[in-house]
Image (cartoon, rainbow, N blue to C red; front, side, top):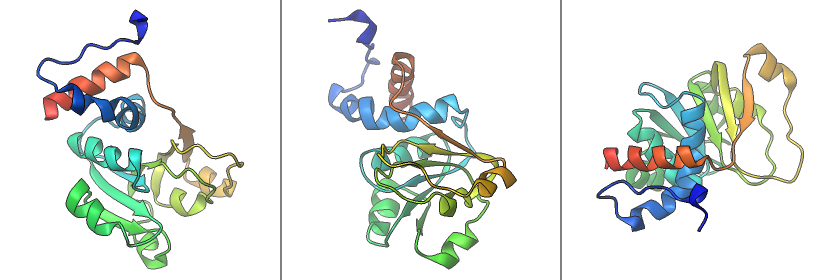
Length: 177
């Protein structure tokens, strides 16, 4: 065992609870911590319900965020709101709903692992805010540069997190229950 890859489990935390946190939980938690969104009063969104899409809203809610889940259809609305605890749900093909949500978010964690144009989602961000890529795709990103430039928006990415992030995440989750 390599000691640099061992984390201390917080007292009282069931190892079965920690398992999902070490991958999908860390992928959502790490950018929120590093980009300083780990405080209450933040409005964020998670794109797509999957591994990170299930864990991300729970972690963001525990930080005190207003959380929106964005999906391509209405099929997962009940799951997002009633089971995961999202505050809002947006269907990306709902033009009116997306317009109404424009300039309302501090961050979006984009977990979508296939090609998709980014302008639609960049328009949801407030000025100076961030689209965080966690879904790995093998095609070039596509967006109109003026959407980024006019709103001073940032496209960034993350893949998992550090050992320090992992220990911090476990302590955070233990504290929040």
